[in-house]
Figure 1 (tube, rainbow, N blue to C red):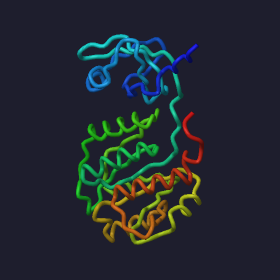
Figure 2 (cartoon, rainbow, N blue to C red):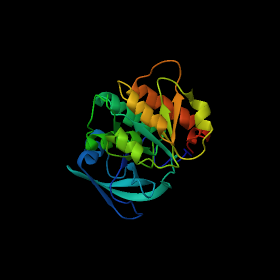
Figure 3 (cartoon, helix red, strand yellow):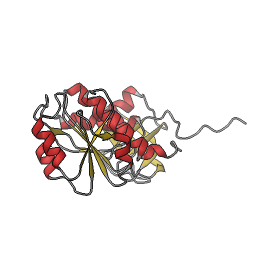
Figure 4 (cartoon, helix red, strand yellow):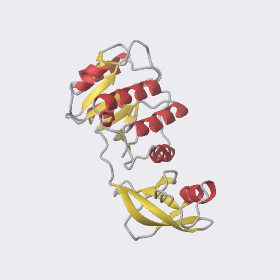
Length: 253
């Protein structure tokens, strides 16, 4: 006899929903998500959709009904609990829109717990379209099969970020003028951590002095080359995940 196909199929569409998911309680998906399921993925009644609610975990659902403006789903099986992502914050200076989009997307894929954007004196951008940014983060989480969305904070000035910094969280400052080798500094600290990445124009002298004077800050170097802001953010997060994060464990089950 032929083998029974796995359910849900690995190719099933994935999406986050805003309402908590409960076994047996139908979910109605509207707006862009409904358009994606109905028009792009062309789901039909009986098809499988994988749903996360950023609260209870990941669920396999069956499509009950597809209409012009909504899709109704029936949760069937909970596949995974909501994951406990590593306790790493990324604190990137705002960049030009397309470059900061990359930071948001890749930080989500790499597994950060929170993203705290800030504005420095030499920042080219000083505003963030929060709705658009959350869409980027959510789509990235769907693509990489995260069950927990990173917390995305509103941008603040660098001075406010430093003033409100929790003392127990190490702040690894990617300083283009040099510092400790990043891997050595990161592995020497086992508690909660954050990475501070500067803007296109770098930090000015007063900002660098303020960061260096902060008791939680540790200057690190990401190598002999000066990296763009988005490259530095991706490189630093990847390095931390490899040294202290969940890259040290096995792959997905």
